[in-house]
Length: 214
Image 1 (cartoon, rainbow, N blue to C red):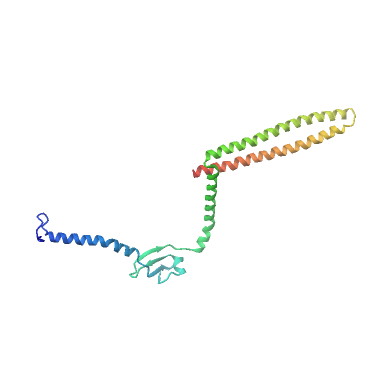
Image 2 (cartoon, one colour):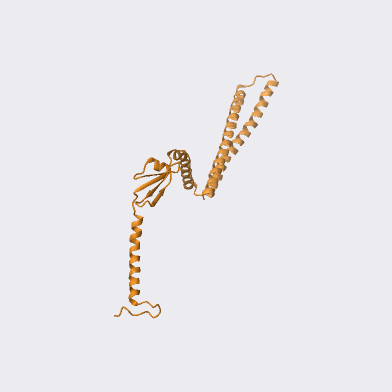
């Protein structure tokens, strides 16, 4: 085979073309090795700049390096990696914020597990409020009946008093029981109304939060 045959288009011998191809192939094969070697270079020096801008270099990482942030250098003083400054004081100041964020995330997960979405939470709210309102309506009806009974008992009492007669004991007991039941029902209704308000408020918060995280 003749290695000196001229390329009619490029004016370059076939021999030289083959040499160039071999060199190019070798370079392509060597590139991953060189790249790997560069990526796995170990740090020899560690440098940080203090508050005055003065460079401080040592062969180990000291607390000062960590506090100011430092650069890892190879044996040729080339930067391999940069590490941000770390402050214990700043980290402690941010701890409550991180804790609150973690707590909020935990609560969000609980809400999604319990209600899945705002639509389901709205349905549960309406069911809960309807049940409470039903109790309120029932006790208000009882209260109205007790008020009607009391009017009747007071009329009877006034009639005995008008005639100058002693009020019978059974009427006195009826008035006493009636008043006690009235006060008890009023307290129950008031408690149920507070429960209704608190339930509505709590569900509204849940629904609003679910809409945010949906």
